[in-house]
Length: 63
Image (cartoon, rainbow, N blue to C red):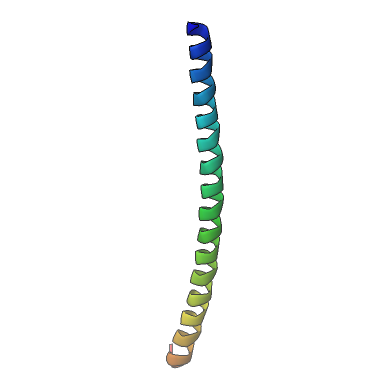
């Protein structure tokens, strides 16, 4: 009887751990996708900012 209960508890724990691992894996993939999108947006903003700075900064040929 005790062995059967222990086996049931161990099976439940194994299922819980596997479920948590799968959930964590999926969440990390989603976060990675979000980070990639943010990086792309940041790169675009940096390019736009650099372009605006170049337009607003007069050429200094007297250096």
